[in-house]
Picture 1 (cartoon, protein in one colour):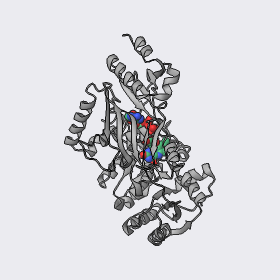
Picture 2: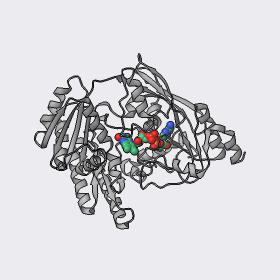
Picture 3: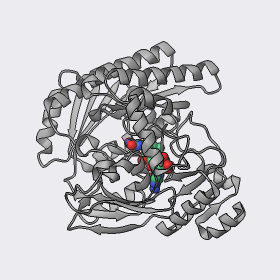
Picture 4: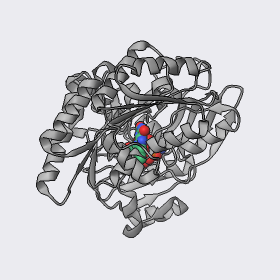
Length: 451
Ligand SMILES: Cc1cc2nc3c(=O)[nH]c(=O)nc-3n(C[C@H](O)[C@H](O)[C@H](O)COP(=O)(O)OP(=O)(O)OC[C@H]3O[C@@H](n4cnc5c(N)ncnc54)[C@H](O)[C@@H]3O)c2cc1C
């Protein structure tokens, strides 16, 4: 069969082969990860159509990059020239919501926020809430094991995935996992796919665990005269053992950028802010504990009980990256350190910013030790570009030295591909290669990604 005949056989599952259209499916939201124009974009609507796409791809020897919303920040959905992109945007149905078993079955292209809203209407809660909640897909969240604001209390996407349907590179369909509260039959193939970044198969259906809806959260805002002081408060909150449902940090650069975008009226003198929420039944007592933990280093602490104001502050935090993007060219890092080392990480970021004479906006999920230093630089100036890369490497390297990881939630993708072998030992790398080869012996799924 010729390429044209193969594409014709896929019928309506082919979205386009027009480079003017396919170009926009060739990259995600990351920088420094390269861009190529895919030769075709496939957009199947059903599992059967995904099977046909992967069978034809196998016969034709095409390489395939699965794609959700392309909101990723590591280049994990970027392909090389001649890649065929398989977009899940037409597979966007919530198949069922079971209020008794507290689970939902969804297609991979369902937008994260839409699932959260649909289950909330039935009194249930799907916690995973990446900053991109309004655009990212559940399939993409599974493939990156996305985190978000909720992780400090509820954990990451993988903690809510019970089972999957996956189409393998050769077109075979595999079901993994369970619908029961417990189950230990066989290897945990479900969680092998969580965080696999599109390299092991295409996820076509996901069964997720749901929780009863919590109460409206109470919100605490603490402001600080330095970023280090905010870091010390994070360490004190962690050490106090109090449980909160959100613990986010934004530095002065981020606050100013967000303020310019949202007109929230943040005070210019504030060097750092902690945004803390509790959705527990004893939320007032929990936030009183947090207030105590902040007392030694905070300039001001305010506890609010207006849910609308809390939601507005949360939305402002979600705008951190879009707001920083407006300051110039940017390179976003995503490192995670033990929470007891967060002060050291912050100190190092400030040193790097001073050494390289660059602005580095700092925000992140402080309660998890997961920070997103965002390096602002000038792409047209080679010295500035080189400085940005040096800063990125120094911060990522230091996170490892602090006993942390090169990526807390955005994934390895293409951005941190060269870093994976610095975090994992040789045996772990060899096992990674063997697992990938077992699922995709010809190396046609997302080649060039992860390792
Ligand atoms: C403003 C902003 C804020 C963000 N905040 C957060 C945050 O708080 N926490 C966080 O973790 N991330 C965050 N992200 C990053 C991003 O949104 C997440 O990584 C998200 O999970 C990607 O989902 P997606 O649908 O866009 O996937 P894509 O970017 O399209 O793909 C990501 C990876 O998943 C693979 N993939 C997608 N669908 C499938 C499938 N069905 N089967 C197999 N593989 C698949 C792709 O091949 C790729 O490797 C943010 C991004 C932005 C732009």
